[in-house]
Image (cartoon, rainbow, N blue to C red; front, top):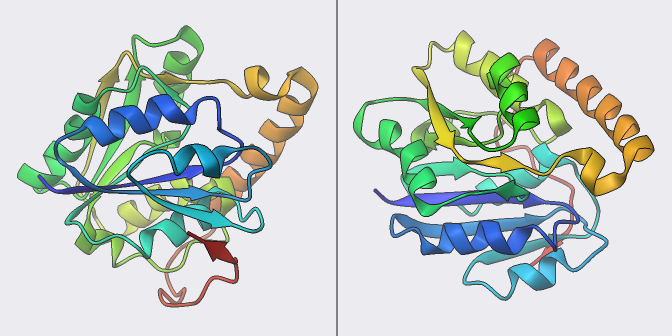
Length: 225
């Protein structure tokens, strides 16, 4: 397998190293694209310490915007999306995500947390479709219109697009993987506000169809490598 990994990151200097260590240790990964989404910490500096393509956005575009920017650099036949705050990620998890795409004709995999942390396991048990850990063949990525405006609604919109286009979708268990909760990053009050904004964008993602958007529509975000 030949895999490109796209990782959007915002203020993840503390959590990013463990993710990049696992990703760069995976023998099947040929390309890693880290997009620093206008972070206010040393996320970009941390990324530059690894053998990855690091892109720094001058302003925060939101998760979907950062992923869209990263996808413009992809050149491998299999594309994996990973969050920057994962805990317990191993190289084998990346290959587990990609294997059904490479060998079973699957159009999209969803990585589901199990055996990591009780709250993240519960989240994926209730709503597995929210997972940001996914794999696709590059040909499917090239079919997607510009989704950079969707923020945290990216996953919901991808699910809707896959359903509308009859994609073959498979869930993959990522045993031992979890992520850091917003309450741990931001504190309770800020986390509540951030979650409310996230759920609003997720709701918009369900309502908005990606059909009809121009796939080559330029993104206005500035960047540097």
